[in-house]
Image (tube, helix red, strand yellow):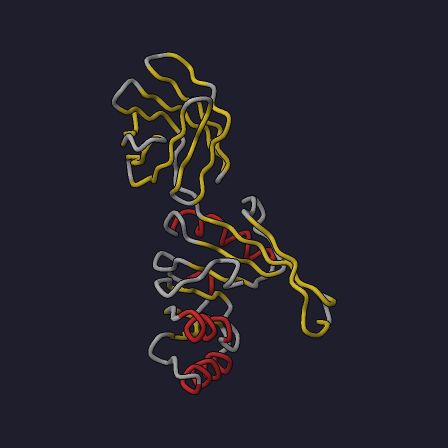
Length: 225
């Protein structure tokens, strides 16, 4: 799960339903990431704290007795989840609304109900699990920036964007003339589009999209009313 999320040392990993804490401990020990695990079971939280201390990562991670539905999400850049579907349904709008664009969510076994995943992987288990057999599927979601609407930039550029989660449809115009966009993508805060004779790659930050056209020409789109 951590590998699929491309976990790095600068990440803060939040494990919802952390059990014995192995994911958060592994994030600290193998990637140098900081982390927090939350679980309702005090005995498992105590075990996780002891295991973190024995692993030498007690200064990087914390474990708390807490309801996953009340957990503070906004600090996390990686969220790992192994929860039943009704909890996934309740968490989905919070994950989209409270995590920063580019944050990664990895779910084990159960997909989020409405949000299409960015990637999925079938993992072979070291030994069969009583309810899952010899494999398990994990799902990756990258929190998308909100880019729906109209954007304008100097040089007569205009964008019109429709958005459904990370999936976008983009129209580009220059000096009022429509351009034939052949590809457009949004991954986290990274937005790109291209067509015959033009290509743009930029990053969404608040009310602007800053980037470059192919060839190095800077271009900044501002959100238009």
